[in-house]
Length: 291
Image (cartoon, rainbow, N blue to C red; front, side, top):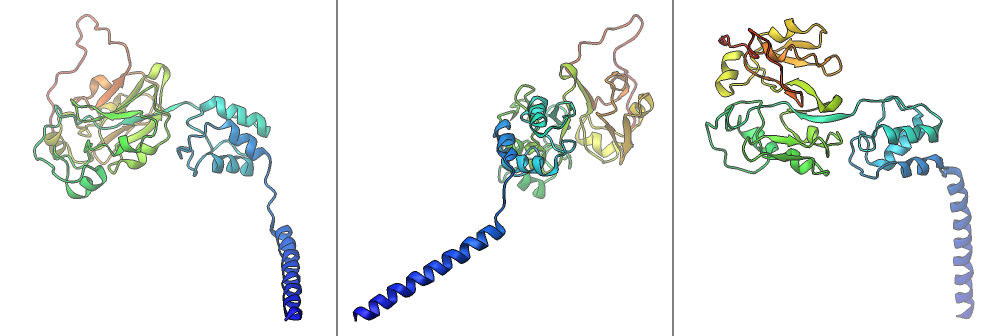
């Protein structure tokens, strides 16, 4: 009996020792030596893990930066240019200065501009309502106002205005992580240049319907007349599928397009009031003709 016990103990010890040796050599064979710079870069990042960089958190972003050694296509929207400059110093690279971005709501279909025609009763989710209805105003592309963008924002940078029923983005809090852009089922939110002194110009409409149907549901809808395209001297405005679009990379903020828009679908944010010249009016009053 004692001999059996001794044999069993010796056998188990031998098996354990052999297994340990095998595991040691396997670990040596497949071990991954992590670049110590990853930890250094990770410490420079804000730790928000918002996904705004396009990767699954700050650690993954740090690993990608060290792995590729290329800052041209990688950016931390939360940390901004200062964080990227510090990271560039760690990696021995030069960080390109990038213009800060901000989320922009490309829909001005407020309750005043796009009156309610039907009442929606269902789950309080834009993603759900988008499948079931065109929206209470009848616009198939307009904001549904149920706040999926608000829920997605972990920086408390967006809220639904009680009066207009539209999302409002905070200039101070928005870090352009893009979570709201992804959350919106109608793609009305876009990341654009924040602009000097927070000044921006954009077409606040994404409706591609023809002028008649578009205006029937929203009085400030773009009707695709093309007047803004002809007015722009910088080729910053294009017209496609009955909808004008202002390229924020080309736009010089000259403000010449906004006065010629007959429906008021072009918005100017944070500009000083226009100075009225003698014998001129600030806004064209010619009638709008739509098909």
